[in-house]
View: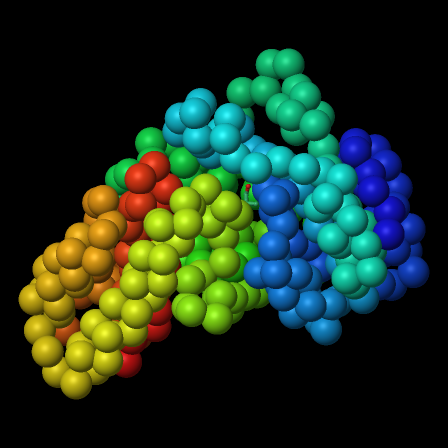
Length: 279
Ligand code: PAF
């Protein structure tokens, strides 16, 4: 496995592979890798000849310095986990490499980013879209994989790729869960032992609400009940819990179209995201 830190090296290596007619897959990450990331690599490994994993803790997508500061980072451990897991190249640029002095361009995707995470994290999706546009242009992969846990991010990046005619296939990666249902996330490391006991209630509640929606119960009532259930279970706050159109992410009142149930609930300072297909 090759580790490169700058764009010139990256282009040299990827150019060699392309000259040999090999296809390239990209898994963008911010490090703090866990089994969920490794499963994404496995999915891509089956579709492309070479797999690149980027590790870049993108400061532009954090809306608070405190959140950025406490985000776990350990490049050596990330690289050790990737070695022998089917990754061919790790691209780990520095912040100066990604955003050199004078960097002034941003990419923003309208509409899809207005609500849900966009409403709770100022500037988040501009940071995500800007860095992912750069990574896709830098690596020019045939396929790029993004996890469904960040479902709105996946929708936003699919829109970005379509709108900018980027010749890359976006591959969704299914959510990977702990045995008790908690979706894997780098942020789970923040949970205290007590919070960790409460956390799986999020998935449990979503499963129950999705089944009842499919059985014909009114969606608005289920949303209100779901939020109350989470608060009663010990969550400190529910940022949102909503049934949305699976493609446009517009609110829905009935299950007449592919639908997604999306939620974020907080335990202390930790925001837990989860979502499920419905219907
Ligand atoms: O999902 C993530 O880890 C990040 O938002 C991404 C896509 C790597 C961009 O920094």
